[in-house]
Amino acid sequence: MQNQFSRRDTLRLIGGAGMLAALGGVGLRASATNKISDTSVLIVVDVQNCFIPGGTLPVTKGEEVVPIINTISQKFKNVVITQDWHTKDHISFASSHPGKKPFETTKLPYADGQTVWPDHCVQGTKDAELHKDLSIPHAQLIIRKGIHAHTDGYSAFVEADRKTNTGLTAYLRERKLSTVYVTGLATDFCVLWTALDARSAGFKVFVIEDACRGIDLNGSVAKAWDTMKARGIKRIQSSDLA
Ligand code: VGL
Ligand code: ZN
Image (cartoon, rainbow, N blue to C red; front, side, top):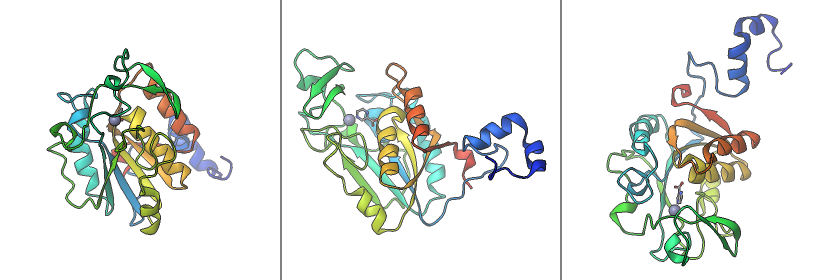
């Protein structure tokens, strides 16, 4: 803090609330403070019919992210889109676990507390298609995850068994992209895991809050933000982007 805000006049001008915002990495709201560059990449997570009201695992107000993401994507030269893309007998479905109901948890070889979900985003179905109004023609790569029957896959980088890679880390490194901006659905699952894995791989990570919506099981959205903050992931708004 001493180094960052050593000028006394700056301190006096910013004042209490502004100071907190600056320290939180949110930036001063009045002006855009986050500079996108040629080494930045926007990751658009799972903006698919399944996660929009009317789909099989709807996220409340999920459709609201579509116009926001369309607008901000125009500021990025590099965009990667993800699709949750499950086999029809997928291990993450409650229907694969007799006696289990959606949103309960179960024990799997790789995790004690895997949440089981309604059947969703089955490969090749209308439900798994990207939302029809999502418009990012310059997106360069679509990563499909959760594609193996035996493991769930929340993160765009590594499947939930924490062993099976999607190849995204190597792709970003090869293209010398070093700063990752995460948007999409859902804040507390696929956005969270994508942001955490991006950070673990050494990228600088921002999550654009108003371009995300959450599922929120027992406070999981608030928990997700706490976890991300503790890992040095910055929470910003689309209005912060220059
Ligand atoms: C997601 C639950 C199950 C997500 C995917 O996109 O956040 N959540 N599959
Ligand atoms: Zn899924």
